[in-house]
Every structure is written in structure tokens, then in C-alpha cells.
Image (cartoon, rainbow, N blue to C red; front, side, top):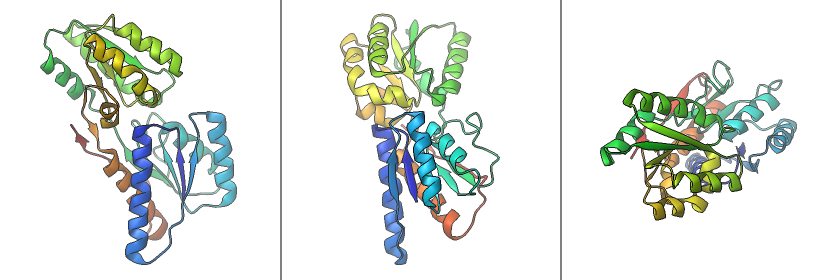
Length: 261
């Protein structure tokens, strides 16, 4: 099995570790050998495409891409081979073009945006301005940010958007929001997650809570979340991969992990 991680950060690391732990457990239980090779795309589409070409050429029995861009690149690279693709942590598989393909399935960490914003206003009903911090290059953020705007418009709450596509831009965006917003919302955005350790102190020092889409943000300094358990999601992904390789399965099925607070 090829395990292709889009980039390094706590959420995706947790998923990869859980995938491998579950595969190791199955191998030990059944007395078989499951070999997997790890690849990391460092959030670079060119590198991910190179990895895809390598994966296609080496003839893996299945590919487990972690995060949206990695999944898209692996699906494209193996299109002519029919290789099973079992992705992990795709927030919006339909928008990403990953549904309706017989050999593609996986786990979704779809976000309940309204619940997180309800939690935000339960904590502080007097919030007047919400900061929306995300990366415009991150597919996971498209739907939740649109949902957040709709939610805030319906409540008559002002919001300011700040974005970034690299660490320096994200740090600057967070510093700006620290002086503009009463609370900040970030969905399951891989780019912001990778920078959370560099920005959380700005929010803490300003007394501004950062609400996010995954528990790994909170472990790196954010204030609160209601998102999926990524260890459970990784184990579910490994189970799907094992089924695909050994017993066959409906590869149109998507497992959506249950949220945990």
C-alpha cells in the first residue's frame, strides 16, 4: 500500500499513524504481511504528481492519500490502472471530484460549521465581529467558509476575512485579526493547521478565541473545536483499504466520521 500524505502537520500525521497502526494490527491478527510505503508531498502539486507517477509505476495494490490535493493527484495518476484509492479526511468529496468513481472511496471529515459557530456564540453572545481565517488554495475551506458567511449574515454579525497561502502570509493575517475580531473561525484548513503553532499566541495574547475544525488545532494552541477524531478516521480508512484489497467492496461508499468535541 502506498500512503501519500499531502503535507506535514498534526492532523495528517495522526491519520497516517492510525492507518499504519490499524494495518499492522490486521497483519498481526491474520498472520499476513501488509507492506506500505510512505510518501509526503509537502503541499506541492508538482511533487504530488511526481509521487503519483512513481506510485503508478511501482504497482501498489492500493493507495491511501491523506487530504484533498493528494487524493486528486493519486486518482489522476492511476486512472488507467484501476488501482483502488481509499482516501482519508476529504471534507467535501463531491466538490473535489472524488465521488461516482467505482475504484475510489474513503473517509470524510465533513464539518458541522453551524454547530461550531453556535458554540462560539454560546461562549460569548456579545461577539460583534468574527474573523474568518483560511487559505484560498485549500479546498477543505470553500464550503465551510461559505456556510459561515451565510450563518453570520443571517444573524446580522459582521465578519472580516483574512487569508494566506504561505507561513508569512498566515502569520500576518492572524496578527491582523488579533486587532479586528472578537473571535476567529478556521475550518479544517491544512494550510492554517500547519501554521497554528506560529499564530496561536497572537490570539491568546489578544484574548481572542480561535474556533477550529479539528482537535489537532486545539492541541497546537487554538481555543475550541467540534470535529472528527482523526485516530478513529485513520483506522476506518485502513479498514476500507483492507476490504478493498481482500474481500471486495462497494467503492462508491464514503464513511463520515462522527464529530467529537
